[in-house]
Image (tube, rainbow, N blue to C red):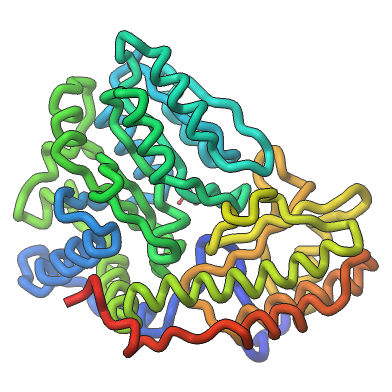
Amino acid sequence: MNDSPRLPGHRFLHSPGPTRVPDEVLHAMSRQPMDLSDPRLDNCIAACEAGLRRLLQTSASDVYFYAANGHGAWEAVIANLVAPGQAVLVPGTGHFSESWAVQTEAMGGRVIRTPWVEGLPIDPAEIEAVLRADEAHEITAVFVVHTDTASGITNDLAALRAAIDRAGHPALFVVDVVASLAAAPFAMDALRADVALGASQKGLMVPPGLAFVAVNARGMDASRLNTTPRFYWDWQRRQSPLVYRKFCGTPPQSLVFALEASLGLIALEGIEAVFARHRRIADAVHAAVACWSEAGALSFFATVPSSRSVSVTTIAVGEGVDPEALRSIARERFQVAVAGGLGSLTGRAFRIGHLGDMNEAMILGCLAGIEAAMTVQGIPFGRGGVDRAISRLSQLSRLSPLAAGNRFMP
Ligand SMILES: *Cc1c(COP(=O)(O)O)cnc(C)c1O
């Protein structure tokens, strides 16, 4: 490990969360704490709520914050919506759907899973079949992971909504947008998603520690009817104009200042431009991975190209390739930190995070660092991935922030 007193330049962080924090956001965090009745704090929290609702494209939902990570947001959803013994459908998307399912079971819920087929997104027909078979309407909610950060697959939420509708089932539609928000479009109201949940450290470019849920009237009704004991997570208790009640205690102020700054950066760039940038950078990564795959040792984990996420790309490695060794060489010798395989993909894959505060130069540097590490390790890969990424980027026109406009922003 490089333990010299100073690392010249900077290390490229290509984990799909936590992601790099922009300087403007870091600076916002260096403010002193405020007393809890300072109107500046109220204004900051109001700006965070409004900004998140714009990003989630919802006017029908309220936002509640937690001093927590994504697992905390999962806990909030389960505590409010699922009484012990109640059933929830969790369609299999990989490591993250399974973790959410296990947490639901730990809290007493009964989980019905649809099987996860490696490399594929959720099949809407499977959801429809399970819901149709539930004639007694015992299933309270469908918990869907939009982008599974382990598999690098983004599910088609409109198709899943349509499947629930076709089954004529009243289950709540609950969506985890931890890895997709501010990278890929998500239109909560148009999808009639009843609850959405997220966390600060991925597309939102804020350090870990701030989680949130957005809940519409149906979601609030379900939580009101659920009398399971809870306090900190309870949505009913958090409906208050008082900051102290809204957060069930002191807000994590530095993180709230950070979120206000990051939502400001997103508004300044324009949300459409943010999405277009993520699309462009993901296309460049995909061009490189397609090239690397030609030598046979590496491949896209997501087999359906349209399901490949704009946030993270999961690359499966063949027998004899050690992705953990590759990661160490990339990080320690070439200053490029990528992520490993999770759950059943441990030791079988590595992942390139490309969401958040990211630009063309950074992704080209990342891809070159990985090529260098693969060269050191003697991994066979199709040469010229960086060149392919460059040609892809040079073909794609840049959507200027001015031309894109600030459609969802004031
Ligand atoms: C990261 C992530 C989580 C969990 O978030 P933590 O902050 O690590 O608890 C949940 N869902 C998805 C889709 C994620 O990417």
